[in-house]
Length: 346
Image 1 (tube, rainbow, N blue to C red):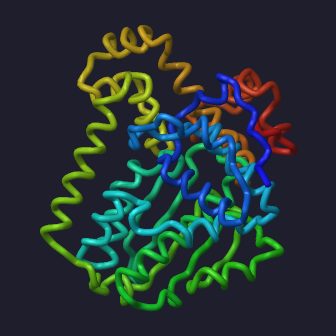
Image 2: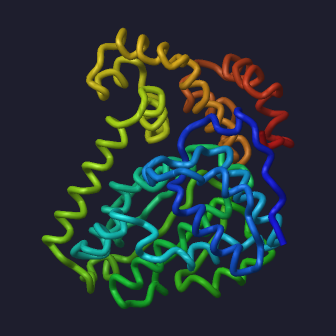
């Protein structure tokens, strides 16, 4: 049986980088075990000798959507997370496994996560009771959103289990979605308790006693080597790409406020004038790149959160909601309110 071929056209290959290609290969393996072929993976991954080149958002999003439809398994993300082994996460996994404690391992994952995905933003916060990891979709994942969040829960819990040899039953997870009819499936794959509420991010809460646990695989020298290699890769990810891709990466890794020309230029060791000139040489403009990411985030927040349109406008840097609404209509052909009532994934 084969997954329906994903419609391909040049526009689908545009957009910011989203996922390391190894994760789509793992998805292909999960489907293959079910006897399902995924022909759309072949042209997408063919010739990608450079494994640090991420798959763009739009084809990745459609591939995941096609896999969900072909399997009729809405909990496919949980199965995918269980299939992702240590080596799937490359040097980032190596650095996490060499960390001293579980808290240090989580901080390592947060620091180097951009090497594996640009579709998500990770934030770690310590608190009196322990700590919490927030995972936010900064790009519009559309129908792939639940799959990605489910996969992340299982991936992170499995990493912490193997690092500590301990139960994760004391962990608490909150997913930013209404409870699905198949919620019992989470118990098949996770020890931590899972709750559901509409919101912007997934939150993973860990008690202090668990976070202070030593890692069975702790290796101080190995951590230094792996962390240094990750840091060099992060730098090379910027230096070795075209200026347009480097700017897209910076924008995708930003939080609420997108950096302006001066800030981007300073990060890339350029003058603002040189930044604009080099973008123009690639047929790009900073305003268009800003709008590209604003559109992705606007669609994500409109679909997946209860944030008022005014608040979304403010977070995207607009002085008022009417200006944002005009821009959104120019990008998508519909108003923000119409999109929220019934968007179509494009």
